[in-house]
Length: 352
Image (cartoon, rainbow, N blue to C red; front, side, top):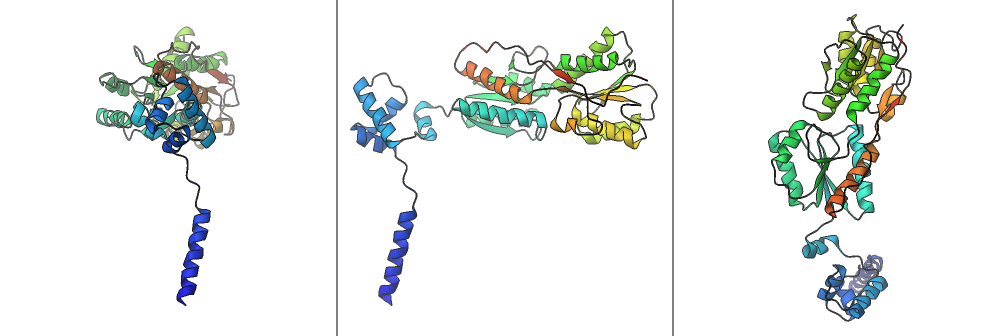
C-alpha cells in the first residue's frame, strides 16, 4: 500500500514537472553565456558608452540566442524610466474620449510605451491634484489630458508637474500643447448649414458651463448668426446627455420662436428629436436638428442625424506624436489642426 502511494506521488510529480512552463531566461543566463558579469549586460542594455565593442557584441549574440527580453520594471531600477504615459480623463463613458484613448494606447505601444489611464471622479481642485500626484508616483514620462473643463487647466498651471503634458482640448490663452479640432469652426459650419436652408430662428442647445468644448461650440454658433445678421435666441444649457435632450425637446416644443436647433453634441440632439416626436413635432418637417461629434449611432437613429464629424482616433494618435516629440526634445509635429466636416443626413430640411 505504501509503495503504491509513493509511486503515485512520484508519477504525479513527474507529470507536474513535465507540464511546468519553461523558465524565461534571465539577465544572469545572458551573462553566463556571454562570459561577462550581469552588470555588464545591464550596461549594454542601457547603452553605456564604456563597453568595448567586442564585449557588446558577445552580449547581443547571447541575448539573441536565448531570446532574452528585458523586464521593464527591472530596467526602470537602472534608468528611472518605465516608458509609461499617463492619461488623465474626466469624460468617462463618452464615445469620443473612449475612441481617443484606444488610439492613444495603440500609438503608444507602437513606440514602446505603456499607458495608464486615471479617471477623475470629479473635477474639484483636490481631485485633480490627487490624480496628477498619483500619475507622478507611478513615474509616468508624460501625461495626456482629456479633461475639457477650464478649471482643470487652472489647477494644472499651478502645479509643478515636471513632465510634459498635452491636451486634446483648447482653451483661450492656454499655453499647454494641444491637438484639438477646431471646435468653433465646426459649430459655425453646422449653424451655417441651417442658415443656408433658409432658417432664420435657430436655437442652440449648449453644453455645460465651464466646459471648453461647450464654450467653443457656442461661439461658433453665435459667429454664424452674426455673419448672417440674424437674431440670437438665449441658448439652453444642457448636460451632454440624451435624457436632458429629451426633456428639453418636450419643454420647448410649445414655443413658436424657432424652426431649427443646433445641439452641442449628438446625444443631446438624439434625445431632442425623441422629445419633439413625443410632443407631436416632426423632424425635419416642423423643425431641423443638427448635432456634433458624429458618434456611430448618429447614422442609425430616425431620422438619421445631420452632424459635425470629429475623428477622435486621429486626435489620440496626434496626442502621442506631440507628447513623444516633447519627451525626445524634438520639434512638435507640424500638422494642421484637424478640420471638422459636416455630414448631412435627414434631420435637416429647407425651411417650409
